Image (cartoon, rainbow, N blue to C red):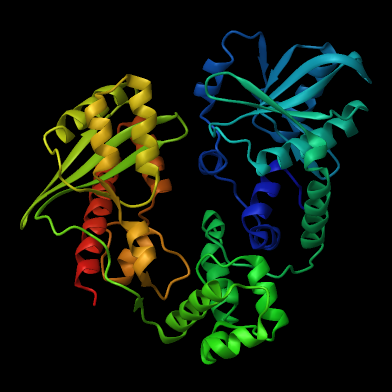
Length: 461
């Protein structure tokens, strides 16, 4: 039987085409919670709250075929809003969050249905539009009329529309590529950080290493790989072996500065060592704070604000924890009150997400402006400082990748931000205290890893 194509297949392809190929060969047991988390969805109970003021018919059948039959029955009845409906046609199966009746002509009568997904992101991502095109195609096959607009509902209940024709060409090219993969055709692989979303990531990485593909270079663009390939450079080893002047004489579509950086990145990977370009710009204060936030996107909530308090050789970890999402404000305000006592102290974090959280919660709860200014003005992003000064022999520069490179180890083998959310959900569902402790341990390891990177960076010459 031909593998089915769903909206999730488009997400998988856009993140990593090999994901589609591996699933087709090995079969796939979908982890619904993990998929919702990856694809910017919310928990059903949160979605139901957003739809509380609407007259909604929910499709509750667990079997997809039975759910599809029930959905068609409700569409024939002309119900206004269908939640969690299933649309099937051939090997296409789609499950938009909402099907909404609008005026027009279809096989159902003087109305037809359009699809809408509920997403937490404020940005209208291409992957949302791609799914919208897929919903429209299946709806067109079922009701005899293809919608021309797609819709996304935000966590505040607002709905944003977009024209499907904006991504129609890319959608059809993507669908054709997916069909070819399901027919057994192999697509050239390109290793990116998006591949980490796939359960087959380690296979992707192993394949890239085995063929020494240029996509192993950190943040290299597809267009740059194409330029190198046209110049005869097919592997990292080949690129690393030549002097940059000789590489520059053969590659015309990449700037000299960019070419020299990629060449150095290739040398680092080929030689399995890092290069220090300049001293890492970091303060030498004996007192510092290191912060890390754990967030539950499924509930649009933040449940842990972790702080490593450093005073010379003394280090103490503080966990401002919301054991229930309803306690977010209390945990946040306790964190803010703690930060207030450290005017002028460097506040370290890794990556941009903490600053986004601080700004959004400051607006949400009308927090102390002086502390919000401190969190912005005293913050030091270790990732930015390292990128400016050090070239690592790594394909990815995540906290886990770089900290493990310098020898730091997390207590959990499967430590990740995604698993932190799943542990927190397990705590909420079952009251398993170990799951909650796993969350706290993971957060503490993250801030300690960030501090270890800071200390390592200051030692580099």
